Structure formats: C-alpha cells, structure tokens
Length: 425
Image (cartoon, rainbow, N blue to C red; front, top):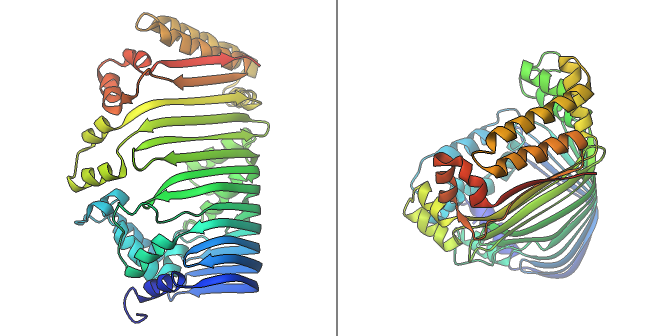
C-alpha cells in the first residue's frame, strides 16, 4: 500500500490496529519529520514506558522529558492548501457537512502530508512545548483505526470510535519564536471521550498557570512577516500593548478548569469553565442547551436545512456567569484616570450614579432592568461578586429568543427569567 496516495496512513493505521504488546520501555527517542517545503516536526522523549497495548487500546503509558516542536516557513504551501480546502464549495455527504465543508479533504491531506500540515498550523512561527512528565491511562482508538485503515469516514452510527482516557501532565511550558509565553504546573484531563468524531466529554483542571501576554503579542508581531516591533507596529497593536502594561496584565497567573459534556443521542449539552487569576479576579461561566442529536444533525445536513430549522430544534436550558473582583476594578479605574485625567475615586463614584439613572429610566419598560443596573452599580462601587443567571421554567427555543429580541427586547428578561445580583465582599 505504501506506493498508493493514502498508503502511508492506511498502513500505519492497519499496523497499529493489529499489534499487541504486554509492555515496552524506551529512552532517548527522537522522531524528526521534514518535507521539501522546509516544514519540520520534531518529537523527543527522554524515557517512557507503555503497558497493556492491544490493537488500539492502551492501559497505561508514562513519558518523561517530552519535547515537541514545529517549524514552518511563513505562508507555506500547506497552509494555503488548508485554507483552500476549508473554503471550497464542494458537494459532500452529510457527514462531511457536520464536520464543515472540505474537512474530508483536509483529513486526507493531513495523512498524506502530515509534516507540512502540522507545521503550517503555526503559520510561519516556531513553536515548542516541553513537558516534564505525562501519564496516560485507558486509551481506546481501535474503532477509529479500523476506519482509518479502510480510508473511509465512518457512518454516524459508529459512536464508539475514540476515547483518549485520562491524561496528566506536570511541568508544561510553551515557547513561541524563542520566547516562553506560557507554563502550567499541572494539567489533569480525567476524561476525553468522543461520540462518533465529536467530543462528548472533556474535563480539564489546571493549576499554577502563567501566561506572558505582552511577550506573546511581541513574538507574534515580530514574526508576522512585516517586521513589526513594539515601536513600529500598527496603532491598534501599540494601544493594546500599552493598555495591557498599564493594567498590569503583561503576565497573569492562576488556576482554571473546564468541562464539556454532549450527549450525541439526545443533543443535550452542558459546558462551562472557571478561572481564578491571582490579584485580578475569579470568573466562571456555564451553559445548558438541548439541540439536535447526531442523527438529526445528519438529517439537517442531508437536506441542507436553513439556520431557522436549527433555531427551532435547539433550546436554551439556562446559563450562569459570575465575576469576583480582587484588584481588577482598582486597575481599570486607575487606568481610566491616567488616560482621561482626574482620580480613580472620581471615576468610581461617577459611573455607578450614571448606571442607576439609566436603570431608573428603564424601569418603566421592565422593572427587572432597573435591578440589573443597580446590581452592576453596586459591584463597581463596592467590589465583591456579580452573578448573572438565566433559569427559565422550561427550555426556551433559540427561535423564541431571537424573535423576542428583535420584536420586544424588554420581554427577554421575563422569557429567560434573567437575574443579575451583587454580593458584597
């Protein structure tokens, strides 16, 4: 098969789906992939151990000293191909349309020329990732390997194709164009499952992260192909950089967690994230929706159904968001005073008064609206926490939300049973 256009990918999948190993240890392993256009992918592992591999299923693997890098010339041909494939208007089966037009061709290209495609993802940048230690448990990709060896996109009835099990990483660092832009002390992914080819359950918990926002911006600008620097960049770039520095956001650190749970059989979705940023704020968001099942998505795709049909099938069960202030408000008002004159205290007194006035004027349309403005005003004046929640008595169709928003926006708070409340420090 190796001489065939898709031979390498098919052969590799067939081999991985046929081999069983009780255990294997390895050290000083290097995998370097190059292609003629100058793209390169490099993976090195200091040492590792795998146990219980059986035709696409693996019980355990421990990897220490993992290094991964991609290097690509700016504007490489592979990147151009990706863009062209994703924007092509071609006739495709319903499975292709679920994945978006052109993705089958993109998947084909990824396995025909993986080196160029992976490296081109960086768009001309050099990216590196260091992981001190990584542990992987209970992986099962046997179903995906079977269809990959046939070089066929599986039907949507094949729902148990991939489960990446659980993954833990310690000491992760990311470097872009020679500058370290992010690090995380520990990342735990206790679940990483799929329904067909769509993620169905992903949970992530990360502690001790750090992101150098300004360094990251500078690194991207300098390698953009335009020779930009903090002094020669566009006005928008310079203003954004100046604002981040003034707010003390050149580097942030903290913890975060997130989750995604989608039931492909019913279409129910529950997703959310939370983060606690040191000396800044704690934030969270959650969303509950019901929508088309995977089979219903296939039907919509086959019939080229308009967006209005999706709005009718999808319903909002509720959402919630919150922010707890540490020093964010202090920094924002200090920045406003420095930019416009006056004192931070003056700005912090004036804005709540303005918001209360607007709320009072809006109360005639819907009394709830006044309470929203008052809650935001209290949050600005006193700090503490601001909580937003939509908890309708029954799931609300997206079509009803968009129609109400267009024709009678003052009724949206009642339709969604929307609340905005302030909790003092």
